[in-house]
Length: 130
Image (spheres, one colour):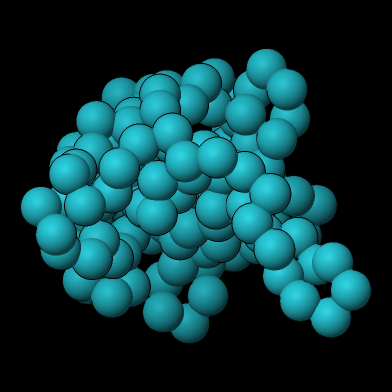
């Protein structure tokens, strides 16, 4: 595919992906894709990533039901970062929050400034998702 020539995968064959809510532009998460994950994402219009900790593809929502329907795919000017604009079903964060960026710096500490949208222990059967 010619479009993959524009994507600058790193030495591990991965490219970082920023995921943003298509409706309100909230940044939901950051993940990694390899060429196969990008191909699946394009074909299915559902976000698929490469899990570095598990060493395998990961369709967002396959365990939690919190799928990301892809509305737009963008590539930055250097070709080394992808931006997905998605319709997020449920929470993007494996800790149960809508966004992985649910903590903000206040003074000299990070505080949680969001409410959980699902119970991760119920979703992941007491296993820590990776």
